Amino acid sequence: MRQLILIFLATFTFSITSNAQFNVNGNETILTPKEDVAVPISLKGIQFKKYLSQDYKPAFVDEIKEQTYLRYNIFDDEMEYVKGNQIYYLKKEIGRTVRFADNTTYKVYQKSGSLKYFLVNVEGKNDLVTNQIVKFYPKEEPLSGYDRGKSADYKRKNDEFYIATKSRVVQLPTNKKSFYKFFGPKAPQIKSYLKKNRLSYKKIEDLEKVITYYNTL
Image (cartoon, rainbow, N blue to C red; front, side, top):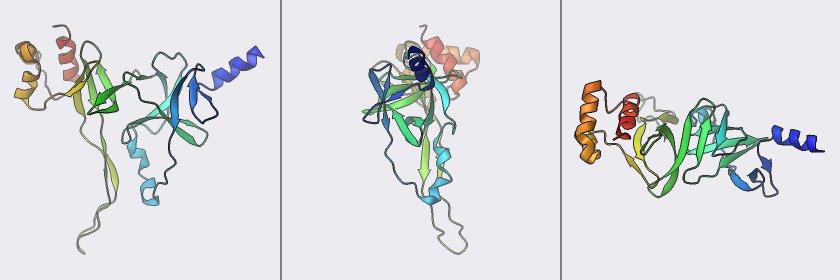
């Protein structure tokens, strides 16, 4: 009997409960069923554009040791888990962390009163995080016989970069003067660091270096 139980736990990372929610380690409910909403036929062919990846990737949630499979729905800002034909959302809580096997990490922060997933680029006293955006553009009918109109579409928009602490997230300015001002009394050191290392305040790979340096000041 003990062997059967171990096999069951190894096969199913999450165990389903009577109210169609899931438990991890038998105590913490972390998944809730996605509402079954009919997708118009005209939009079914572009649903994949809402996602970071169509595939469910191996991931770990918080400090839970068992691995599961999730995918990030950027448009709806939800981590999705599937069992059978039912999709479940990972419940959002401040600080909840999802670490995918490729070392990509997402963490939940509060933004404008709502909980949201951010891609974590740098962790430290100040986290550098990215708000990934997918926007929906409805169908546009042709305005004349010469106009072809436009089909409905989901499109990735430019990422937004934020500095996150335990209590808040603040967007990094895209204007150079405002960017330096953001760092207050440390602005001269940040400006010198960018100039010395020929870094851009607009490129994420350079921002990672800047914030890593800022966390040492």
